[in-house]
Image (cartoon, rainbow, N blue to C red; front, side, top):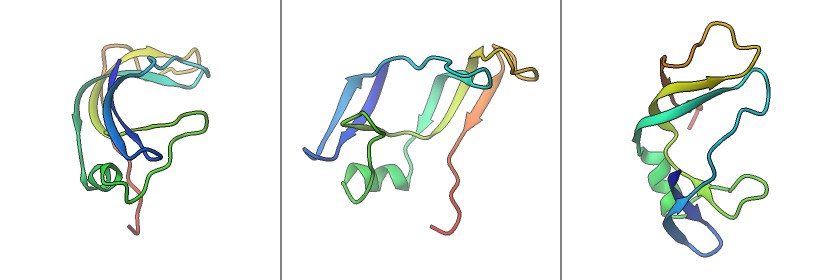
Length: 95
């Protein structure tokens, strides 16, 4: 899948091919992104003010406010079914 990635060590922003996520635990839900917003946090990350890639990666993917569709659910997920719409955003108070 395509993603906008930030490479903090080299101060680069690139469009990359990122591996498609997989369900790895029975309580996870996999979404297909329909729309994504770029917010003030993403703007700061792309200007290298902060942002740390996850363990094992050299880059950080931006775009944490999104609208999507459920495409797969783990075996223990009961109330969410494929085809359902979903909204995802990260909200951290005090910033």
